[in-house]
Length: 213
Ligand code: SF4
Image 1 (cartoon, rainbow, N blue to C red):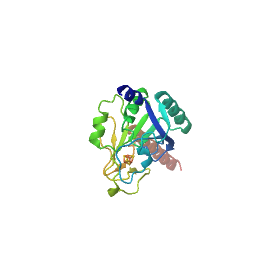
Image 2: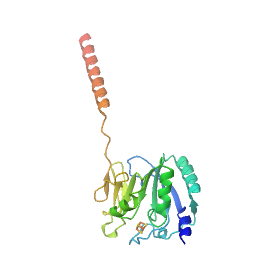
Image 3: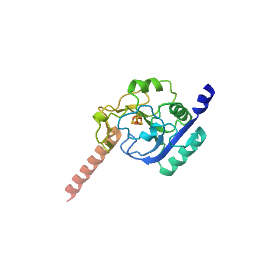
Image 4: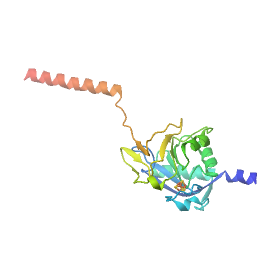
């Protein structure tokens, strides 16, 4: 029995892979979204009820085949190593062991994991991971607080207010009430100084033209 479980850990059922702007928590980056099957949460109003069933996709891959597929799709869609694992729940059942190993073998990928787990469950499950995902979207869908969701240049609104984003490296919560506001990059100091010098130069040359005239 134990041997069977060990073997099963080395496989994942990939239902589909798409290119997406909507799912990666960054204002202008796109990502590969990988839907895996299997989830035990049974949320009312689940967005993908079929995917609660483990093995639903009937596309069970071992690690090498999965890595090859991701590499090809990443190149094809030009998703610059950005990946979202969705489902189903990537942290449910044996999915978690596979994804943990995938990250350790492929640290170059910027991974976001969508899970129905709560924050304390995520921290407990991921605390010993050598390579953690960059972002985790946590919280099971709650139909009582549902609303229109989506991503714009300004931010990311999740489907119910109990959900949120956290940073994988230190589990810092990045969103409030299910809304992640994207921060604009501050203009760097050097750029500010160069702009000021350029403006001053322009002003001086205008004065010089005036004097000649
Ligand atoms: S966690 Fe996601 S996949 Fe699982 S039942 Fe809830 S909505 Fe469905």
